[in-house]
Amino acid sequence: MRRTPYFWLQLAFTLLVCSFLLVPVFMSIVAGLTENFFVGVKSGFTTRWIGVVWELYAPTIFRSMYIALATLAVTLVVGVPAAYVLAKRPGMATRLIEEFLVLPVAIPGLAIALALIITYGGFRDFRTSWGFILVGHVLYTLPFMVRSVLAVLSSFNFQVLEESAASLGAGFWRRFFGIVLPNARSGIVAGALTVVTLSIGEFNLTWMMHTPETMTLPVGLADSYASMRLEIGSAYTLVFFIMITPLLVALQRYGVQSTRTRKGA
Amino acid sequence: MNGKAGTAIRLVDCAKTFPNGTRALDKTSLEMRGGETIVFLGPSGCGKTTLLRVIAGLESPDEGGRVYFDDEDVTSQPIEHRNVGMVFQSYALFPNMNVGDNIAYGLKVHGVAPDKRARRVDEMLRMMQISELRERRITELSGGQRQRVALARAIAVQPRVLLLDEPLTALDALLRERLRIEIDVLLHSLGITAAYVTHDQGEAMAIGDRIAVMNKGAIVQTGSPREIYYKPASSFVADFIGTMNRVTGTLRGGALELPGGRIDWADQQGSGEMQVLFRPNDARIVEEAGAPLRGVVEQQFFLGDRTRLHVTGVADRTVVVETTEHREFRVGQSIGLRIEPGALLRLRD
Ligand SMILES: Nc1ncnc2c1ncn2[C@@H]1O[C@H](COP(=O)(O)OP(=O)(O)OP(=O)(O)O)[C@@H](O)[C@H]1O
Ligand SMILES: [Mg+2]
Image (cartoon, rainbow over all chains, first blue to last red; front, side):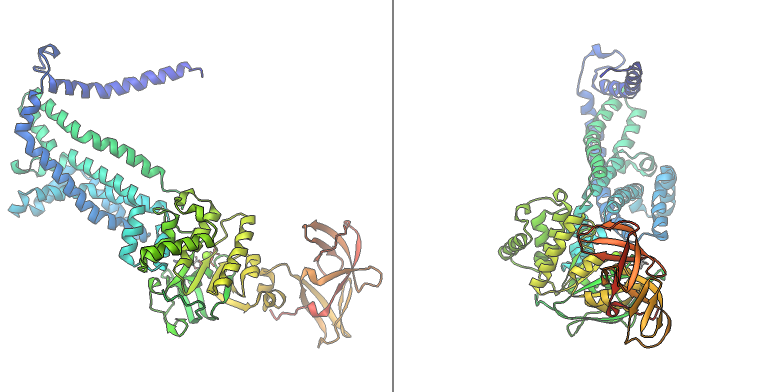
């Protein structure tokens, strides 16, 4: 196959764009691993900064993880049944609810956070607990779970599957857990990965809502950039990358699969 | 799982109006004898599926309607307690299970012990001749194989009644023919009461002990396939099932006079103009000399097992005639026809 000049032009452009995005990432990683970034790489490599990050910010890392998991739990328990109900009753009301659910995504996170603070700020214990952050994250990520599950449920006729299961004697719960959920799995997995990724990386809402006791990883990042050595901030970024990359890879794989499978039967 | 074959089913005044105001089914009363196969036949949108779903318990009839299985009033029972087997046009097999697990599903739900369950699944697979497919995923099956699995799954729990909604529509003609014969044999060997929905009159004729012809939400006639074919109660039924000739003639002196001749009809009362109907195979082609009716071949269609002719000059419009004779006709050729008066139908509407 002969490549046209056009192909080479495209390739060059693609590589240029990629490097534009990747070089800063690379630089940041290097910065987190060098002894002294201003001196340069010749100052030598070290994992010292990662150790410092761990000392200073380990709680934010764990907090981000369990907030993400709690967010996931809530969105699963609320979002999956919600998607099921929405898929079962198509109509005006359903459309409206769907649109309504997307609102938190469209409104700036700061505004939502402010609204939450105005409303619940008075409840001191709640305001200062990580549960307050959790509410914000659930509000923000729930639509992603609902939409992901809804998309899969709309892609095959699950109602007729339920009807045939019912004709075989299966009651509601048995149908829901034995037929509906397993067949919506790809959407649930994709939704779950999205929720976890978004929650771990969420900054806007959390920055506004956090207290020193409820700082999460991204807020900690901002904090370190503002008040620490550049190397520490960069090492912190590295930690964040290590946490988020496996999630992104999984998201890519399952997300793509869920749009490809679910045909036939 | 009280697998008693041959539950009688009775619908009393069952109507169905959907929340959006669509009246899919007018007040319908119907009796299905135990072990009988009844076919609901009618054009698209006439309410066949709705009627089937009322029997199944997937739709509840409007206020006042009642559904009985034998003497038991099941109107308020949801489908999962009615013990009905359902087979859908789309098969509705569970994609998250393999073939064996699909068939075993109902047995599992009914709490059948694993060893008994496995034996029953084996039996079903053998009966449907798909034993080698046991471990296959649903997505790895052909349409015909899927339909066999769907049937096996429905029958495995020994339902009181089997409900089939256009089970063969998605298959190609040859396979449809073969499965239709298999289903017919199966239903009768099981002795199960079955309701079968189709819009294909050939399928209805082949499978039904009785056919209920539906139109616009109502059953307009029930009867054996022969009755429906030769004694349609209305012109709708006559036209929906097979080809029907409709000609206008004048009754005079014990004979019906048509443009192409006359049909002796001594026992017919009255006189004057009237419309009569007859089936294409009720007009026999005879020697032209001395034939009671004469016409000219306008078109001929060789259908393999028979030849169909469009004949002009016999009546006020072209009539369709069918013959199993092997001879070939020419366009423009004159032919003689004889129609026995017994084959003539008069309809009120
Ligand atoms: N859930 C529903 N809500 C509102 N109207 C409905 C519903 N289901 C069916 N209908 C309407 O009721 C009428 C009868 O529908 P039904 O599905 O019983 O027809 P059918 O005879 O099975 O047709 P087909 O041969 O096309 O399957 C149609 O006009 C249809 O649009
Ligand atoms: Mg239908």
